[in-house]
Length: 330
Image 1: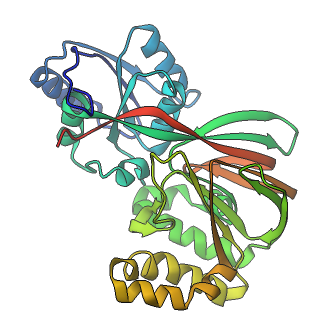
Image 2 (image 1 turned 90 degrees about the vertical axis):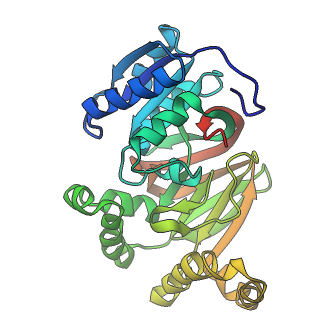
């Protein structure tokens, strides 16, 4: 059924799966059981590969007539499937099987419960969410466009992603990013940019990084941008300008203690107001339907935890309501 409760015809379903991330036998059993329960008889399977993160597999699924695509894998697989489904009207169901599973977490979908995820895929309802769009110009002049569902980062955030050790990521999950942060932050140096939000006049700044979010929850339940919503047609932006260790500690306190704990009570919110001026000096938050950033020297760029190399400029915008995602019917 739809989000309004209107019954839908039985879907022609396709499963796009990352064979490295999923137990294919368990996935097939769970999908078959959920599909049978909800009356879906037509299911096709498409495997991702090192050469295809999921975009081409999803194109093949659409060509075959899929009206529902299950993305089984990590954030990279989900993003690749969504990139092809954007503005298509075909529904996306998320089967989380990665390290962060950030879109699933931000949408409060079940993590670590395969049967619950497949049941939502076939028996849930549709929710329209925004898709972030990043048009980038690389250091070599090449241009390309990509979608993001959670967050894109320029500078320190992307350096952190690039410094994350694959072996620790396999062993520790998202905690591997803590190790990467401990190594990346001491080496980070501010860089010059010019940026414009919502088409307004360019502003110069020296920053350690800029994060542009479609939703605000990070691994470890860290609320980087707690006001970010998936369906408001707006991007939430954090401009990071810490000075020294104290500046980074101030940002850490803000995103863990203030955003995660103090905001829940009236007393806590008053305490946040008293420290607002200090917070804003190290982390300025902005909102807008789009932002354009030009860097003085090429900087690392990442989208939803995937490296995209060094860029000279990037324009990011929100494509409002461009993706239908399956969520629990209740």
